[in-house]
Image: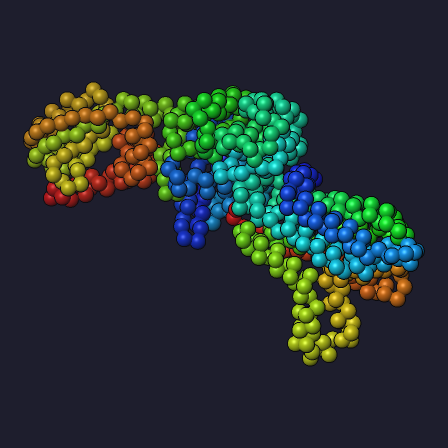
Length: 271
Length: 333
């Protein structure tokens, strides 16, 4: 089993990457500034950690910046090594190509998780100092969800990287992933629903159900649904439980399917 | 057992046939030098052995296993110095070796490995700052981890200075003494002749010659090439010379103008001349040249006919020689 060896090596390599350090610093700075900027003027109790996270930090920073960091560290995972020639070094050792792809998913996901936790440290300090009711449990839990979001995007980006035969294609793929999931998802799915109106009528599901499913099928929305439920203390409970389960299932899908599809192509390629 | 065996292996890329119906066998425990100019198909062959590239046709067997199906098991017992690799620039030399040890599940001391390849003092530097030669040593060190049964070294001396190349040869010899099979490629003959038990020469995707270094050296060292300017040469006279003991090749130059080229053992030169004259040929002038191993290599790889037919077991060269002779006879008639 050489997957852990690949994951460990890749983790060590990734955490030394300057691009990642830079993005984490940027992220950490922005979250801190936002936490400070939107602090209440007077009584701290009126403004809770949960509100800050779910209204400001979540939609504005986490769902835009975490996927960006993930795509940046994931898009060149396999294709970059393929182009530079270090992949030959990796495949000279007894690793299967599946070990390489999934080892990279794990290694980079671990590196990204570390980055997210590091990125939330400075904001935690700010929150502890400014007059808000700092709820450590919510904050830590939220960090976990942010890390999950990042890991899913790392998976998608690494899968794309494994399928790409050149670094250029991987870059285009990475940009495509970011635009699709972060910026254009609702526009695009809206268009799709419009175009397949007739087909949808024939399905045993209502228009609203399908719209909801498509919304939570986007990992950024999926994580938002789950974090909001968590911060409202309604995780896998309450009215939105079905939606949450769909969201969680889709996150698992996005974490596994892209690397598998990427591996199918990568496994057949001449390197 | 055969360490590496290729049978009828062909690899076609979109626009070129890189390897063409190649048969190759490397015996266990031998040091095999895989020679040929750049672009001859050496690296493609090695990449097929390593399962980086899959053959279009034919079978590749390494250490008794199928190269594609059992690739991981093969690489557990193989050390590889690939061609055109790059290192992980952000990781230190020691981290690289540790990674190799972990990957092979070996029980080796990273520092011992690094000092064996002369990198003990640079172990904690990032490999991105290493020179090409140091990177080459580092990856050789990674290849040596775990005492592999088979070492595959693709152009191991590239980037090394003469002292480094010598150290590389010493390591190859040590590994062979340990019992490992060593298969390495080079486009420079001088680097392989000192260490190889056997040499194969690739050209345009085919193996054009294969013999022991001693065999090549003896055959070539004992032979001279005799160029004779003569008039009245006919096929019968050439055949008579061909039948002499110690003569390996007789050719009339392509234009048929009367320059006869004869490859023969040093002692039969005068017999060749005498036989020609007895057959009614007028010899105007002649001179001899001694062929070196380098000449032989160049002859194989640059399209001339090799100067020694005996040493070449493999088709191309011999048939080309025969065709030329046939052409020459055509001209005579």
